[in-house]
Amino acid sequence: MTAEPHAGRPALGEIVRDTHHNRLGIVTDRLGPYLRLRPLAGGREWDADPEDTEPLSPPEAFRARLAEVNARSRKPRPSG
Image (cartoon, rainbow, N blue to C red; front, top):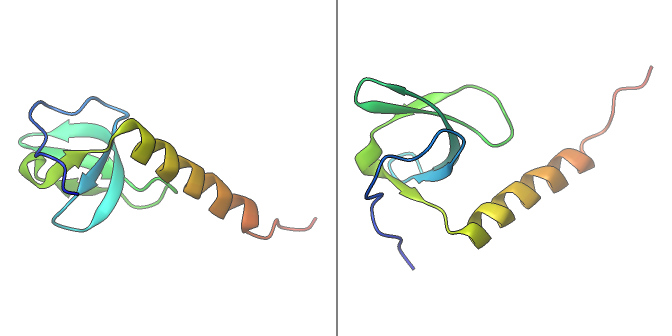
């Protein structure tokens, strides 16, 4: 099932799918005509054309966040 292109401007903090890069990201900023996205797990941000983004449904966003929390919980903790 393909979501409709994002009709409005995504809000800061919203999770979107970047269809050009095939990645999920959290909207952290708007730079000129582009959106600045950060991976759910943190890391290097990237720019995305708003035309190449689509919103996640609430269940999709929940599953994405839950998958990230689960992935973090499986990482070994540093000893010390």
